[in-house]
Image (cartoon, rainbow, N blue to C red; front, top):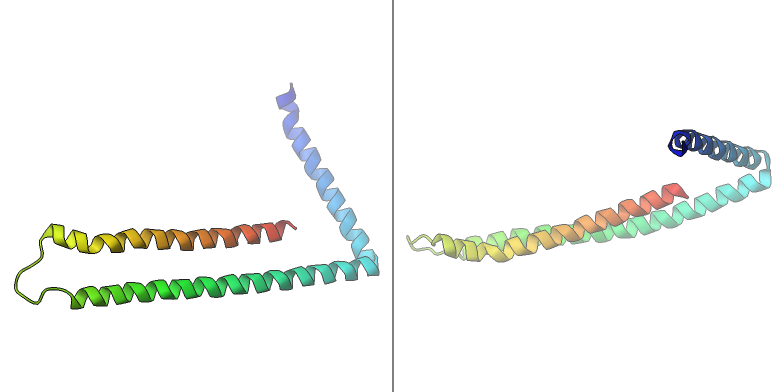
Length: 129
């Protein structure tokens, strides 16, 4: 019996939330002081968030640029360090030379992925306010 009432309760709660939000919005629009205060608060919070996001974006871009530059430098170094003789390196030697690159790449990629996830969470929190 309780499970049958669950959808009705969800719809009813949604109705009350919507009605309350409309009521608050109407009061805010009709009251000049509340409207000015709300606009001021939202503007201030948006400016603060914008500054935070700008700093995070700059940091992320700098880290990504360094990462790409390091990959390019590592590629150039490995190209110049290849043996000039006609001998070709064995498969085990090639694998050993690329192992550090493979180990380093996932950790850097994970770091950047975590940073993006943090930014998404902050955006979601900002939208909920």
